[in-house]
Length: 254
View 1 (cartoon, rainbow, N blue to C red):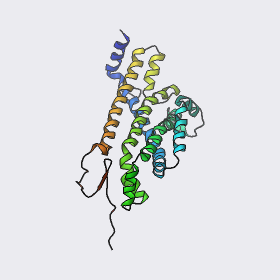
View 2: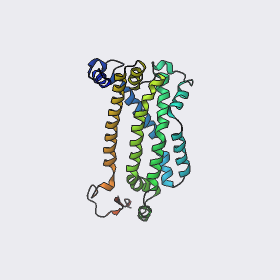
View 3: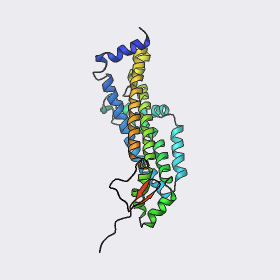
View 4: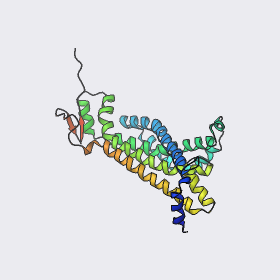
């Protein structure tokens, strides 16, 4: 049989999809690892980058942190983390140490696009929009939540989209340090000269990456207010600037 014939045979064999080391289980492990790393990176990177962008300060720091993060090879960082002492990780199962090391490495890997895009998203809000918001009496916090963030959200989501796909693809290297995920199929296949199995694992990784990319693109399109026409609710007394709708803050009575 050809290599691609072996690949097809591996993918169509039901037993290869079941069990603790089957495709379905390993896919679930890698997906959980990817989502967790992305959420951790969002929790760390989004608040800092968005607020620095709102203030218009710290741009040099934010961009340079991102550049340093891009310069560090993920596998080198993973190798250093997996040999570091992690007390209590042996009780987490066979993937305890490797899984934790991979999670940290992937979280750091996801930070650069999130930080860069989130900071730039805030800074690219048109000055006239900020002036209009201030002219309506909005505070800095109101301006951030009601004007800057809605306008910058598509670019923020673009950074999350990039991070999601990159982290998913990079998570396969966890297998090189005995970690979880679909990388086990790829490395085991090529190590045993079972190239059909290795290519099958790579094909599954690529297919899921395309699905994640499509999902993220749909989310990005959904949050892009500049693609919409009349705002929800049909407000006509709001100030519309550059595709966004800025509503005056509610006045207190009495």
